[in-house]
Length: 337
Image (cartoon, rainbow, N blue to C red; front, side, top):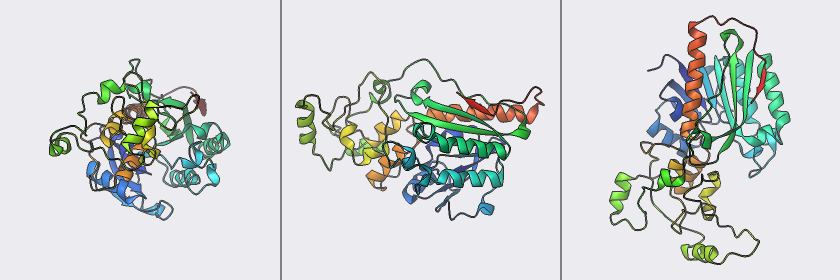
């Protein structure tokens, strides 16, 4: 077990935490959605507090070396409300800042959609200024794409890492890999959930790999695919076997026809979505959780291999800061990469 500890915020089903679990000891977590928290508890640990972060007493949060969290992104997303920090969810970036300011971890991580660095860059600038004033060097990766880390999906996100000034150490974001991983590599070995002879075999060997449709019907999907309207997006998108998928979003819970299997005329299963997030099959969402909530959990998460690479870079930073006196000039506070 790592000697470095982590507190997790806006934890969801724990996909970000899953990446940190190998190198850190996660001692506390918080999540508002009880379905997501149940999956977190089943896969990460029983240290999660289920409550609105606005209701959590900051004094009850334990001290830890690292704070990690991805405040809800809908208010910063072009696919969401786009209300920014004035939105009910958008303002939670400031609740996170308030907690960091009070508890002063050695390192903090904040993840969000790229809209925070584009349309809502004024909010990002104010956050950086605030974190700087309370004693952190702030490093920003504005457009980190999961595909660069062996994930079979384009998933661009903003990552903010703050390192407390008295650590006297700089931080380098992980660089990723050059090889491209495709859906064929990732989900090509999964049997069809519709043709497998034994349902028990699917559930036993491939949990979360079942196919259900509500609306539209499979017949309607086939019709839309077979008879596209010229020069018009008909609401159906099929991912390619041999190119990284477009971003898996929480909307797959209701817009399944935008996430059609490369070969079969059906929505991707939850297990296929998890694999496209590079999440190992050992992560299993309790099957009694409503299917829509399972999809939402995945769509709101951080790609596992990105989280793992980031956690390793933070571990390196902490180990240098703990074991060496790093000489040299102060790093520039703003390091936009």
